[in-house]
Length: 204
Image 1 (spheres, rainbow, N blue to C red):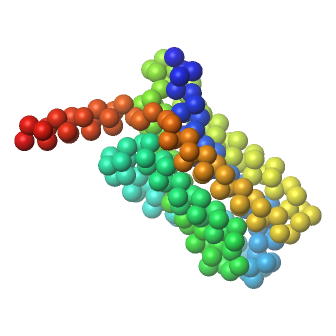
Image 2 (cartoon, rainbow, N blue to C red):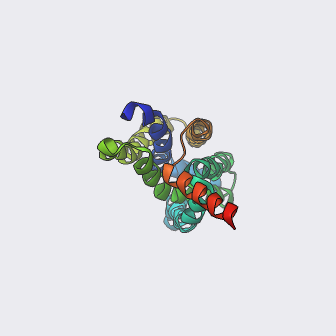
Image 3 (cartoon, rainbow, N blue to C red):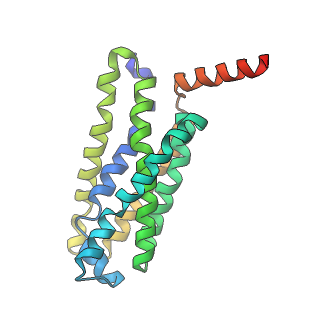
């Protein structure tokens, strides 16, 4: 039943939570970030900081299929958490515009891979009867991530440095994915593909 695979699906959907979180995380504190990093009053650079992770997502999505085919969903989700964690950490530590852009771009790469990967993983591990229901966790995770980012951004109205805490917080779900997927099941389709490949090799 669905109970058996729910923890695995929930862990994978944390990637969608991060997608939503990074969509909303810059909304509140962007003025504080611009002031501290020296590009206040420049709407182009402010927009670039907000949106460059979408550029990273484009490149991440291009490479996602090859990673999944070679490593499988489980390992790809774990490896893909590296740019998510590293990007959030670099952004939180940023003392220049370049560092902030690099961090946001790395996050985007991770997001791009996950937006392709997570729906595939959920559809393959979920029982047919509950595939649609469990698949909704992708969208729910994204919405909850946006809500979490906007809620966590409330203290930024009184603390101009609060944005760093918000970006450090984005590292936590990444670690959760790394650890959680270690105990998750692999996609049965990928396992079948690997077994077939090994069988063919053994006959050659």
